[in-house]
Image (tube, rainbow, N blue to C red; front, side):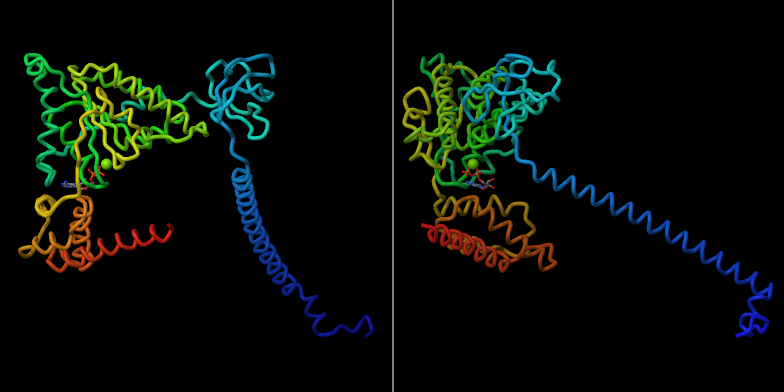
Length: 400
Ligand SMILES: Nc1ncnc2c1ncn2[C@@H]1O[C@H](COP(=O)(O)OP(=O)(O)O)[C@@H](O)[C@H]1O
Ligand SMILES: [Mg+2]
C-alpha cells in the first residue's frame, strides 16, 4: 500500500469532524471507566474491611480462655502471689503491659491458662449488696392459687405465718415456733408456689435463694453469701428466706475429692451454723424446698434446723380437680368442660403438668384461629402432655 493513497477508512480518520466526535466518545468512555474503577475500588475497600473484621473475630474465637484469680500479695515489680479460683496460691509473673498501680491485694485479674501470668486487670465483682437486692422478690401468688394442699397450707400458716404476724402469742404460751420448715415432694407439686403465697399473704420481704444458682453463679462465695443473706433477711425483717432446691447445697456427700464439692460443703456448714444461731422468735423465717429429701444431709434435719417437714405430694383426684378449676379460671371456654374426664386422665400428674395441659389447650385454640377453647382442645392437650412425658421417661430409662 502506497503512502499517498489512503484507504477510505483512513481518509475518514483525517476528517476533523469525525475525529472530534471520536475524541468525545473516548472521553466519555474514559469517564465511565474512571467511575467504574472508583466503584470497584470502594467495593474492594469494603471487602477488605470485612476480611479484617472476620480475621479479628476468628482471632478472638481462637484465643484460649483465661483463668480468673485474685491478687494476694505483690512481691516485686514483676511477680505476685495470686489465688486462682481453681485452687492453690501461685507465684506468677505480671505482664509488662499492666499498670502496676492498679494491682492491689484482692484485685480481680485474668491469668494466662498455661503460665498463670497476670495479663489483664478485671473490674471488681459486682457489689454483693446489689446482687442480694436481685434476690428480693415481690410474689403475687395467693393461697387461692394453690389447689389441693389445704392441710399443708394450714401447717405453713401455723409455723410461718402466725409467728410472723402474732409473735406475742408464742411468747405468752411460752413455746418457740419451729425455725424453719422444709417442703418436700416430687417436682412441680407447688412447693415454690406455696412459699411465694406465704410471703405474699404475710407481706413479708421474700428473699429467694436457689441452691443450684448458689453453687453455679456465686462460685467461691457460697459460704459468704449465705452468711450475708441471713444478715440481709434480718435487716429486712419481717422476712422470709426461701431456699429453693436445697438439695443442691445440702446433699449428703460421699467423697469430697474435688474442690467444687468442698466448696459446696463449706456453704452447707455455713447454712447449718446460721440456722443454729437463729432466734426462732424473731421475725425472720426460713422455708426450704427440695425434690430429694432422700439425699439430704441428715445434719439439716436435726432438731433446731429444718425440723418441721411438710410433705407436698402428687395430687389425688380431688386435688387435681381443684387445680384444674384454678387454672381454668380466666380462660375463655366455649362449652362446659368435662373436668371429670380431665381428672381421670391425669392420674399421677403433678400440678405443673396440669398447668401445662391448660396452656396447651389454649395453644390448640390459637393454632386453629379461635379465641375460645373447646373440650376437644383439652383432649388434644392431655394427649400431647402425657405423650411428651412418656417420651421423656422412655429416653431416661433408655440411658440406664
Ligand atoms: N397445687 C397446685 N395448685 C395449682 N397450681 C400448681 C400446683 N402445683 C403446681 N402448680 C403449677 O405448676 C407450677 C410450678 O409449680 P412449682 O411450685 O414451681 O413446683 P415445685 O416448686 O414443687 O417444683 C406453678 O407455678 C403452678 O402453675
Ligand atoms: Mg420449685
